[in-house]
Image 1 (cartoon, protein in one colour):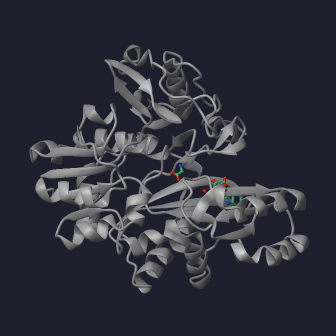
Image 2 (tube, protein in one colour):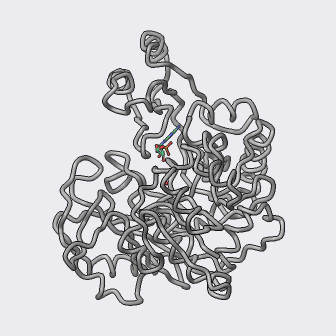
Amino acid sequence: MKILLVGSGGRENAIAWKITSSEFFRSTDSKLFCAPGNPGISQFAECINIKADDIQSLFDFAVRENIELAIVGPEVPLSLGIADKFRAHGMKVFGPDKAAAEIESSKLFAKQLMSAYNIPTAKFKHFKRSESDEALEFLASTEYPVVFKADGLAAGKGVVIADSNEEAIEALNVMCSEDAFGDASQSFVIEEFLRGEEVSVFCITDGDDFVLLPFSRDHKKIGEGETGKNTGGMGAVSPVMKFMEKNISDKIVTKVVIPVLDAMRNEGRKFSGCLYCGLMICDGEPFVIEFNCRFGDPETQSVLPLISSDFLELLLASAEGKMKDYVLSVNKLFSCCVVLASGGYPDSFTKGFEIKGIEDIGNSALVFHSGTEFKDGRLLTAGGRVLSVVGLSDESLENAINKAYESVSKIRFDGMIFRSDIGKQLLIKVEL
Ligand code: AMP
Ligand code: GLY
C-alpha cells in the first residue's frame, strides 16, 4: 500500500516512525511518502517537496502515485478540505472532513456545539471585532481571570489569559487589532477561567466507534512552573495514570467523548480521525478547554511509543470505518518528551545553527525532528521547536524523565532552550 503522510513536525516524525515499525506495513510491502517532511522523517519516508497547505499539488501527487491512504498531521490542510478532496476521489483518509475539522478551526462553533449538547466547558460570551464596546461593558462587570480566544486558527497562540480588568482591556485591544491574529480574531470568545489539572486525550474514531489512547500532559507555557507565554508545547508525559482511573475516565467517556461524537453526527459533521480533547479536570469533573481535529504536538511523541497493537491498522480502521473491530493494546512504558527550542521562541528567533550530539544518544532515547534542515551535510535549526527527545522506562515516570534529560544533555546548538521541569509536577502529586 502507498501511504502519504502530510506535515513536517515532531508529531509527523513520530507518526512516520510508528507506521514504519508496524507489522502490517512491513508484511504488505508498503511505502511511505511524506510531504513536505523533514530530515528526521526522511529516515522513514520519501520526502516530497510539497507544502502541507498546497492541497491541489498534494492531490495531484497522490493521484499520480496511486496513494491509497493519506494521513494528515496538521490542522490547516484539514480545515482547507484536504480530506473531502481526497475522499471524493476514492482515497482513504485519516483525518476529518472540512465541516468536522471546524471543531478546531472555529472556537465559536465548538463552544456553541458544547452548549447545545450539554458538554461541560467554561461559560463563555462571543463578540465580533466590531463589538468592542459590548466586550468592554462585559469586562467591567465580570470576575477575573478571564480567557480570550481568537475564533479561528492561530497555531496554538490565540489564547490570552487576563488576570485583571486592566489586562483584559489590553487583551481586547490585541484581539481587535488586525496584526495580532489576523482573520483568526475576526470574532473571539471570552470565557471563564477554569482551575484544575490539564490532560490531553486522543480519541481515535471513525465517527461511530472509538478507542482512547493513553492520556498525556502537555506543558504549554515557555517558562518553568507554567509561566510566561503560550507555545505550541514544550514537552509532554504519558500516561497520566491518575486520570485514567475508572472513575474519571468513565466520566470523560460519558460526559465528553460519546456526547461530542453523537453531536457531530447529529449536525451532519461526522468526525473521523483523531479527536484531541484538551480537558481540565476540576474537582474530579472533566471540562473541555478545546477540541483539536488532529494529533497533538508534542503529546504524540510521548503517546505513540506506548501503543503495542498495530498502529497502521489503527489509522486504517478509522479511515475505513472499521473501528468496531480494532482492539487497542498498550505496553507498560512511561514516557517523557522534552522539546528543544530556539532561543527567543515563541517570539522571534534566529535559525541556521548547527545541531550536534544526536549521534551520541544511541538507543537511550528517541529523537524526533520538528524544525531542522540538512544543508551542505550539516544538520541545522530551522524552526522554533527544533527537536523532541523522548525518554522511555518500564519502571517509572521518574526514570523516563531522567532518561529524557540525560539525552537532552548530549545535544547542543547555539541558543538552545528547554524546560527542565517536564513531568515533574506529576511526580510531586503522586508522592503526596
Ligand atoms: P488552547 O489553545 O485553547 O489549548 O489554550 C491554551 C492554554 O490556555 C490551555 O492549555 C490552558 O492552559 C489555557 N486555557 C485555555 N482556556 C482556559 C480556561 N478556560 N481556563 C483556564 N485555562 C485555560
Ligand atoms: N500540544 C497542543 C496541540 O497540539 O494543540
